[in-house]
Length: 375
Image 1: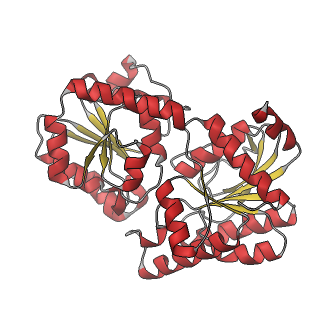
Image 2: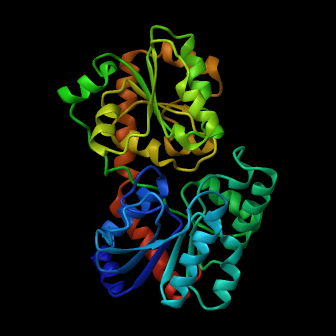
Image 3: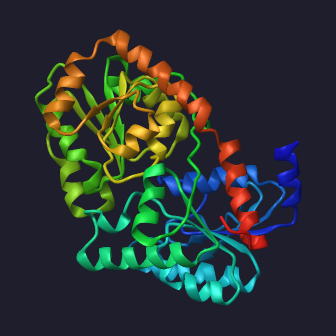
């Protein structure tokens, strides 16, 4: 009754989601989050702001949410303008805003002063320290996070470490709401998949990550150069810049396969489900969606050793800090231990990472923002 009453209370509630490229989701944690939230919030009046670049602008709705297109790119420096336009429209139309990543957080104080109801998801751990940003980018990121954290009606983080960080850095309270992974299902290894990817009928380790420096993709590849008896498959958006495009186009030993981004969920699930283990190499994330999805599929996890990754996996995965440690884990972890770990990961995911619970928690924060309640 509790869940039902919350959703009934939100009937006719006007919501807006700002800060993603668009829907349907392509290759990003925030997009996956937005897609699953709107799928759960059936009784709400929802607008999602999308960039017109790279999206099918003829699609006007997704799971009942209206898609409004902005003729500005949603990434890079222009993301600030893109988010600002969406925020302004949401303010003028009286919508409670969920901002996914405060790239334009510097404007939140003005929005709040004008009466906007804003809830902010702050993304990864200490975004302003990420290596992918320039000095100016880090300065802007810290300023935007600070303004958003101090002046929004609610702050959401996806990991306890991020909650501590917002309090330590800005004196701001926040609520921990994690991601779901139960939209993933074990993919059948079909003959078409075997024909397309010859490696799937043999053991292989899999990593799925954006091509950026703090995801340590190059470290993974270098580690497996010296593990000729073990195969590595890495799926990433290599085209994101010239450096990773060149990296993708290099010649590699037969045991290393680099694949471009895979947007077909069934195909991706098939590749993940068949892997010996999942390697999570992210060093600057909270509760990483790709990690939660792998856990939901029952994959054993070898993870980069960070407090956020340990928290997500409840300290029940295997952890590495450099190439050598990863090589030792791959070469020395017995299959029986991997199987047991996979069962542990699936159990954790069922208890903590389901979209029904996540959507209810987000909606609760939106309702608090609308009514003016404090966190």
